[in-house]
Length: 235
Image (cartoon, rainbow, N blue to C red; front, side, top):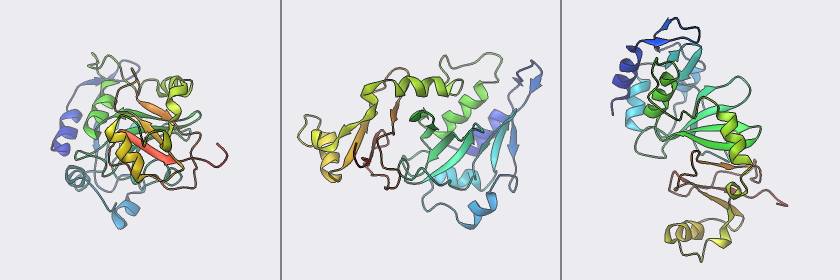
């Protein structure tokens, strides 16, 4: 997909502000992104080709007061959840929407990383779909019946209150009937915790990271919807 053309198309749409006044999205030119200098000086080791082509032409998309940044330097603190990621949007209260780099062939997925409660939920499987959700919040007639950006904290609490979202110890999966999970579990350390997000838990895909060790590295599984981390000592 040509992400730059997608961004330009979104910027042509006639949108509305919260007060009902006309609005158009604005393509942010090169040099206008927060921390863009750091991004250019030390670009990510892995970037999907469509994303690399996008950041060569613009720095982000501004929709009303929201700035979706394509060149935000990778933030620290969530390396136990995501191996390599870019912060594309934040809510101003320490919660982020983060695009995972190198997880799929397309640019994405984009996750909502919440710290209160400690939950990570899937906002969109690709960056293109995430941008469409941001714009959809300002369309006269929204195209999406369920938009996870409208009330992400409500969704996060729903996930947090679900005991099935806290993952499974790796030893429980190694001899299980699910061949893919068993093979992944065999490659993980004994203290790993696995979260299987392949089947949508309606309407929100997500998991609780409260029991993970924030000082340990993310555990790769080779599947963007099977997450793994290291269990916090004593849990």
